[in-house]
Image (cartoon, rainbow, N blue to C red):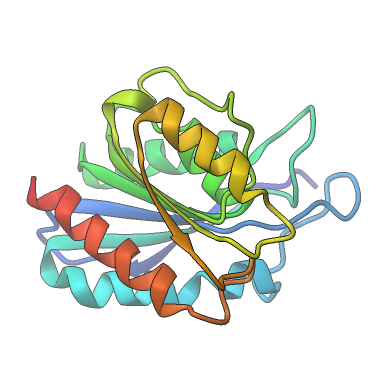
Length: 201
């Protein structure tokens, strides 16, 4: 059976002025392994999506994406799923300006799909990136990268180097780790504020 991504509605007001797409991370386990809705990389983004939805009220539609498969390989990446989700939002709700929020490999997918026409801003949380991950058009977007200085999974140095290349805002969480469980407010609060500022512009 072919694996397909899934767009989950968190909060969809009737007259939304913008959309937020929340992207999970997750390392590969084996080829073409299905994403489980209960895996930790998915679950950790649910509270963030809900916080954005509460803060956005009737102005923002918020969606979560379940990727078609886990991890990142040479035949299929989360970038393709993110682009599918952006197109799906446009098909269903019209050309809403959109902000993408992603963690780990989801942060990388958000950054690499930043050139899509609807995207106005990106928040990458503890993104697993290379300094060369510069997508066409990304430099014209509002971008925030938040990374824990004690992250041992995704390199804070690489994300800081990418932020410099993109001219992005970079916030370091001194005691933060990859899972964002400790000091979570230092990841979530600037994320919500940045999303609201993006649409205020």
